[in-house]
Length: 122
Image: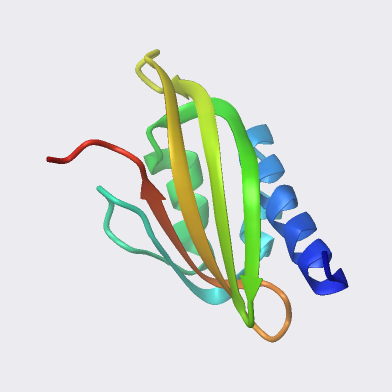
């Protein structure tokens, strides 16, 4: 594992830790001010205010834990594969697999995030 991958893997692990502990200010700070976030079933989220609003008011997940299974770095792109177990706001337990793709800005923050979930569609 290269030093760059180790640094980026640590960044990703920090991000999910902030999500799982509900530390919205810390996770928002990981994004550039002009960031965009694309997640199935939601309109695109834009900027710090959009990310904060998503995590405090819009996201249907109440609590849970992300498990990072792999992190792959290619240039300014970071791909993550993992699983999540938690509880939705309506009390329903959920367990799912996900893939996240982050784009890194020159300052090391995330300028873009795209999330995909493994779910049967056909």
